[in-house]
Image (tube, rainbow, N blue to C red; front, side):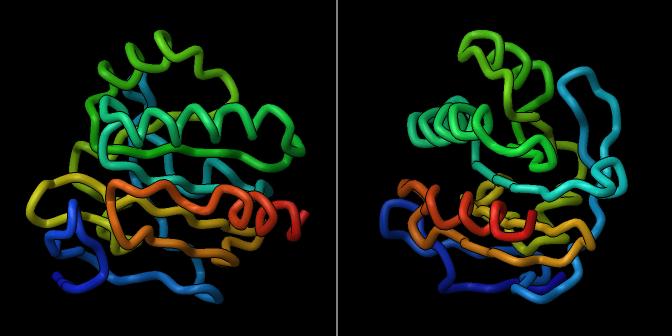
Length: 171
């Protein structure tokens, strides 16, 4: 397993990311994750769509909660061909509970708890915590990465506007 240090911190302390980093221009790697009702999902399930792929450490933390709610709000106004996926390692049952309490309707919340398939494929699995780094990727209809941001400090929010503009630019 490839490991990378010096990419992210949590409250100033360095962490190790596992997996191969994806870059703009790369083909998006496939993944196997779960819906809140335990149904499997992969990249192929979003054929023909533009994917705004958001990874967060845990929906039950303040920054992740704010971020997921913000993307949910933004997603309501996006073109129907843009799918916003929020992925964490939270258990699907906890995600379903959180979505209900937060009124999440415009974002699909998915779990990578089982084997960190997406986390390793996109290079955002945090070794020390078995969580996902805070990151945003935009994948075009041809499964090409057109935008990538791994947020350097886990407690900071991503650049919402840049991610949304990147998704809208490939419509």
